[in-house]
Each structure stands twice: as C-alpha cells, then as structure tokens.
Amino acid sequence: MDDIDKKIIRILQTNARTPFNHISQETNVSRDTINNRFNSLCKNEIIRGTTILLNPKKTIEGTFAFIGIKTKMSDIETILAQIKRMAGICSISKAIGEYQIEGILLGKSMEEMSQTKEIIENIPEVIDLIVEMFVDTPLLCPQNFEFD
Amino acid sequence: MNLDKIDNRIISTLVKNARTPFRQIAKELNVSPDTIANRFEKLKKDKVILGSTVVLNPEKIGYATIVRFGFKIRPTFSSEMLSTIIKIPSIIIATKLMGEFDVIALGVVKNFDHLFILTETFVQMPNIEKVHVSVWVKTLRLKPEYFII
Image (cartoon, rainbow over all chains, first blue to last red; front, side, top):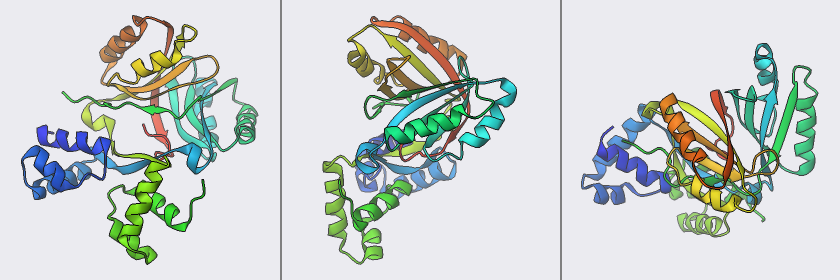
C-alpha cells in the first residue's frame, strides 16, 4: 500500500460515497487510477466492502449490550455453536481474559434482551454471564487504523 | 420513524454496497434518481443513516488482534473520558454502559508490545480507576451493518 491507497481509504472511511473524481483531484492522479486502485484494494481484501452506518434506535428501536460468559475452556465451542445462531448477536468472539466468550448483543426491547439473557444462562455449560447495556449509540473512532 | 418501501430498499442496498449508484436503485423501483437522492438526504437528516464507511480487513494492514477494554471511571467523569478514549487511533468503537464497567472500547493492536503501550496510556489517564483487558480470538462478525469491527 502506498500513499495514494492510504489517501483513498482515508477519504472513503469518512464518506464511502465520495465520487472518484473528487479523490482524483485530492491526490493529483487520474480518475481511472483511483478506480483501478480501489478495485485492487477490494480484490486483495484490504477493503472488505463499503457500507452505511445505521442508527439502531431509529431503524429497529434497539439497544446494544456487551455480553461476557465464563465457562471451561473445553466448553467454549459448544456454547459458541449455540450462541452464534441467536438473532440478536452482532459479534461473538473467543476471549482471553476474565471471560472466555465475549460479544455484542442487539436487543429490540428490554424483554427481548432479558429473554436472550435467560436462554444463554440456561445453557448448562455456562458458569457465569454478564450482560451490560450500552447507555447510548456507540461512537466510532474518527481516525481508526492509523497507517505508518 | 416510519420507513416506507423506498427507504427500506435504499437502506438494504447501501448496507451491502454504499457506492451503489442512485440511478440503479431508482431503476429497480421505477422512480427517478432524484427521488432516491432526496430520500437518502432525508434519511441522513433524520439520523437514520449516520454515515457511510469502508470496511477494512485489519489483519491485512498489520493489525492482528482485536482487544476489548473495560474501564472503571471516577464518578461523573464518564462522558469526558469517553470523548478522550474515542480519539485514540487504535480504538474502533467505544460507548458508556451500565454495570461492572463505565466505558467499554474495542480496539485493534499490531502485537503485544503495542497492546502494552496502549494499556499503559489508559492506565496513566486521570480519572480512569481501573482498566480491564481482554483479547478477542477468532471473532465472528455477524451483523457488521449495525456493529462494525
């Protein structure tokens, strides 16, 4: 990745719909070059895609929560297999730390959130579970992934 | 907030590819590209759509590991510390929450040295009483349109 690639990513990170003409002016290279660079960044899977960020409060009236699960190392896969199919799970991960599984849950209502909590608690391999609600819409870092 | 068929189509199309030309969405719905452009602006104005971004593969640019930080913060300083924490380049997303932690943040690090330096930075910040660190392994990103990491 060179400076042009980085510039393309930087610009698209704050507005994925920026016309290539505009990026071309900012970088002093042709529109075709920007187009080719973008395509090859996608092909090399440096860029996974472009997307819009939705406000869960406006679209599905939902709230996020952090979940942490304590379990035995040998039971992680069993629990993961059940949890990853549950509707509200946005992200789920094995974790090294106080909890063995951590993730982000999106609930449409308090009832749905507590139902999900109960279902997870009732998985026999789960030793302990915390669910902590986000107070507000999470903030995205304006300058994530600093390149050097 | 009432979203109609056109709004929903705009959202579902742009979630998959934010660069989809408006005339393509317009053609599928038999409306004018201007209608789509106006709706898009309205969805942004009403804060249904918060913005658009490029989804990167952190591993490909040297950020090997996702880390979750949980912070205990001195009472009444949560908002102030959240706005400091969110500006640190390795952080992807951060929020206040209720429970064991006052603020939670997800970030990406290049290696364990980087993680150590980042953790030290947090520990030395005033008003942060405690920092919990957890390293995420084999993370499944199931709903990136709502929660990007």
